[in-house]
Length: 171
Image 1 (cartoon, helix red, strand yellow):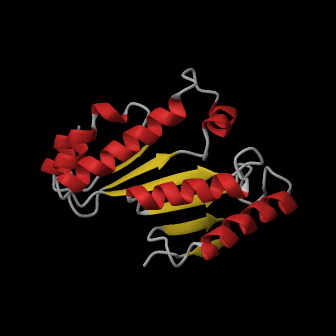
Image 2 (tube, one colour):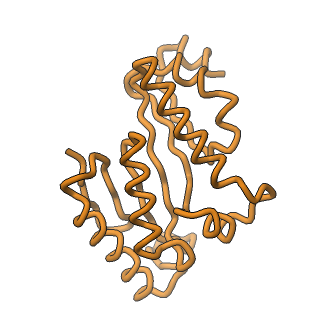
């Protein structure tokens, strides 16, 4: 499928949890051109909160996804691939401690992630209604913003908090 996309002169955007990523890393890195993107939904900063959020059949899924992500970035760097890699992180009460958020931001920055988009779950409608109580959602978003600001001198990645708040910490 990737060959068809690239043969047509198009860019690809792969949105995935990257659990099976090890099977396609070399293909992705070899075919990537400027404008291609892999967005990995991680939604957690620890194995425990990943398992609480996703209930995976493999209790080691979080570690596997992190390892696959690290390997993807390593291989792409080695091949001088222009692929952009982003993370998405759905904020809940189970995965939003300051320690966990700081840890995932620092890890993403260290391995070369382009950006992280943090978001709070919304009810499916045309209104921005939080599934979380609004005061809790706002407190969690404020926490992310505070950490992003604290790390702005050392982080190269872009951090976006959705909805309604955007912070660019990238250099």
